[in-house]
Amino acid sequence: MYKKQTNRQLTIYDFDQPLGLTMNPENRWVKKADSIPWSVIEDKYAALFISDRGNIAKPVRMALGALIIQSEFQYADTEVVNQIRENPYLQYFVGLPSYKDEKPFDASSMVHFRKRLSSEILIEINELILKPIEDGADDSQADDNDNSDDNDASGSKNEGTLILDATCAPSEIKFPQDTELLNECREKLE
Image 1 (cartoon, helix red, strand yellow):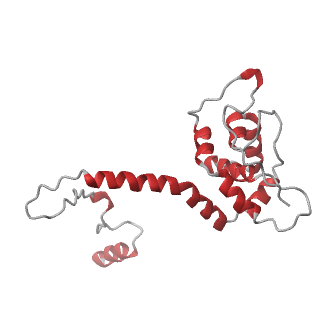
Image 2 (cartoon, one colour):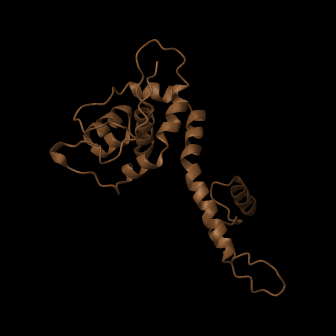
Image 3 (cartoon, one colour):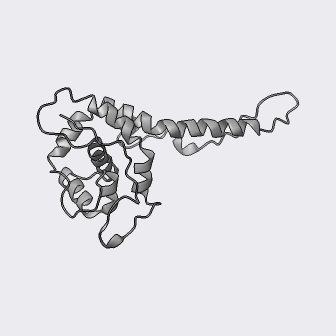
């Protein structure tokens, strides 16, 4: 069973910290959280839950956020939970409304997150996240093409410069492990 969250997007100014501390809007986790379309992803995630019975699942922001944190740092499941507990920026990233010095979920929940968010779903989510970036890149490439200099009279297009690197080219060096080299030595000694 899944209960959809309210459509109100959590901002860093809404995140409640002890002693009234404010969060840095330039922090990488704040920027990542703001770049992900959580409401669109939540609609797709809610469709995975057919039944309205059973325990209520953790929000998609918490599940996906924990998996992103784990893949970023290659943490074990228990370490992901501990890092989220200790870091207010990670707590904001996974969608908690305020800083709490307690575990947001049990480490065994990570197994359920990975099962629910299969590789196909993660690829689809990745495309949703990258779509605005690709659209921005297409716009900037179109602007670059408008300002190109075609001074060549023959009309040929400047293709750029080819830089060759000999370190990646195959060479005919024989190594001591080659049996051909050992056979050649044996034949010369006979």
